[in-house]
Image (tube, rainbow, N blue to C red; front, side, top):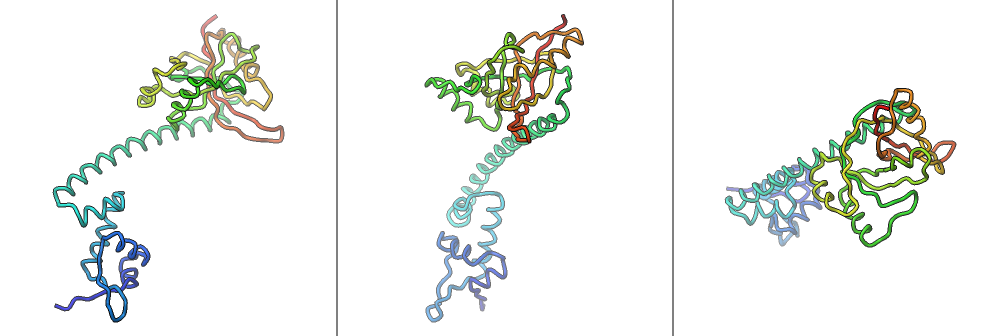
Length: 271
């Protein structure tokens, strides 16, 4: 039976696969069309075209180039089934990973919305349940070998960690020191398992708190900017009852200069 043959340009028109991709896949051994000695052209038959389609099929499942060509050219159906089983596990892991990323993005979106909603306003809520590590006092980083190692381990857990602040109770509002570092919510168990036993990592349980957003220009002391929250507590028969925690939402610039927005929680108790 006469079999139609197709040049590279024909393959591109029929399948929408660029000619350079067809030639690349030929070099990778996916297809091996014979060359016409008289014209110098390579001619593909229907089997070749269908193999190229099959390649696109496997690639659409996010198999790698090598995995796709192996399934089509090297592996038996039993071995291919094993490869597919392995890929199912890979996809399941990716799904779990992206679910966590989605959760963190929703948290980030919520924090950004709080900038306009909660500046100069106060509400009573539980502070986040988290683990905290700090490696910076004001603008000075701790540089011991141990702290550098711990810092790198925390940073490897992005984006599930947050750039956190910590102010001991006795430094509110008159103290000068603010401690900066990283925090992770306890619901991100995979990260918690990695950091829980690291030096200087401390558990911060949720506490009834006054929540607000503060706007801090460069040179201002965050400690003193907490006074309005303390005034709110006093007006409602409450007092500061623990260390302040929070994290930076965003750094911006306006006509007055560099400005940073922080979410903060101030633990409270009845007077």
